[in-house]
Each structure stands twice: as structure tokens, then as C-alpha cells.
Length: 220
Ligand code: PMT
Image 1: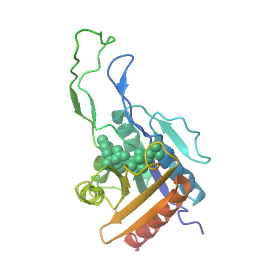
Image 2: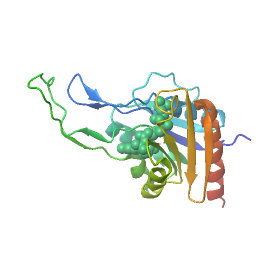
Image 3: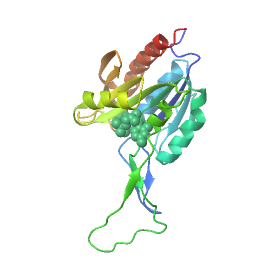
Image 4: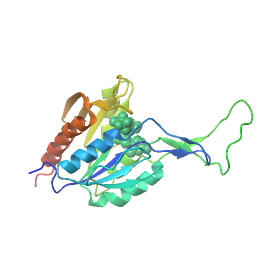
């Protein structure tokens, strides 16, 4: 039998884009490749997959249901609509932590030598999903540039996750917008280093850890 047959996975991928005015936005370098590779491999492992994607330039993996969104607020709504049928939630999206307090109705004019904008916190999608009473098995990602394991363990605990995949984004040729990546996967009583390889191969190895951990937590 395939390792995820009968399971429904909800996966977020890519960046979010937060508008400033009708022509500008803030975002980040996430390409969506990591999340799309996980969606593709999960379908191949027998899962039913819903993929919530920020603005990316990638084809939809065969067999998965894709919902496109732009902002963090939209990504949260889409996740909340899909989550009740889900067994496993994998949050690979690089969600913007802040959005403009107010989106300017007209293009911001070039006046003066400095420009100050005020931002407010976006909702934390993963933390919101992980506090539901019907929460699925929750897997977070942690993109870190220092004290990678320490910060990842903090997110595992604070966001009440089942598993976190720590992503050291300082390594050359890995992480954001590249074809390869490496992860340190951590759960409450164990961890495993998945060394640098292609994102599809890494996705396969991560899904194996997720399936094993999910099954050992859900023995009835
Ligand atoms: O898309 P690629 O180019 O392939 O790059 C892959 C990646 C580097 C983006 C990916 O591997 C990765 O590390 N994703 C997480 C990026 C991130 O923003 O991490 P974070 O440490 O800020 O967030 C921690 C976790 O909370 C993540 O699971 C994130 O999806 C989630 N989160 C964060 C903020 C927020 N407002 N809502 C969230 O759900």
C-alpha cells in the first residue's frame, strides 16, 4: 500500500504578497518549489492533496486540487475552508509577517527624501490552524539564518506543532528559490537530518517521516 493512501493533506506554498498601493507590494523570495514538490510527492504516495498557493510561476502537480491566493489573509481563509477534511497540514509557505496598516487607494507619490510606512502583524496561519479543536497533524517549516535548531524548537512548542522542518537559509544554493534544500526535522521526542538534495527527493523523505509519526500518534 502507498504510505499516504486515504490521507488528506493540506499544503501551503510560495510567498504571500501584501499590497502597499495599486502598483506596489512587499513579498519575499519563496518560489513555491518546496511546497509544490511536497504536494506532488504526496499525490504519488496516495494522498488526496489540497495545495494553497501564493503567487508563484509553477504548474499544478498532477492530481492535486490547487487554490491560488495573494495575501496572508486570503491564505488563512482558504486554509480554514479546507482544513476540516484534512488529516495532515504542511505549512511551507513563506507568509509575510506584516502587512501595510492601510493600503493606499492611489499610487504613493514620490515626495520628499524619505518614506515611512506602518505595518501591522498578519495572522499566523499555522498557529491558527494548530489551535483548532479539530486540528490536523501540523507540520511547520522554520526558515532561519541563525540559531536554527533553537528557533525551530521554539516554533514547534509555541505554535503547538507535531513536527517542524528547520531550514538553514544561509547555506549557498539551498532554501529560497533554489532547486535543492536540506532540512533538520524535529518532533517532541526525536529528530532527523535530511541532507542536501533536490526538493522532490527531500519531499519524499519528509513525507516518510510525517507518515511514520502520524501513524504512531494515531494508533487506535
Ligand atoms: O518556496 P521555495 O523557494 O522552494 O523555498 C522554500 C522555503 C525556504 C520557503 C521553505 O522551505 C521554508 O522554509 N518555508 C517557511 C518559510 C517561513 O516563512 O518560515 P517562518 O519561520 O517565518 O514561519 C514558520 C512557520 O509558520 C512556517 O511553517 C510558515 O508557513 C508558518 N507561518 C508563518 C507566518 C504566518 N503569518 N503564518 C504562517 O502560517
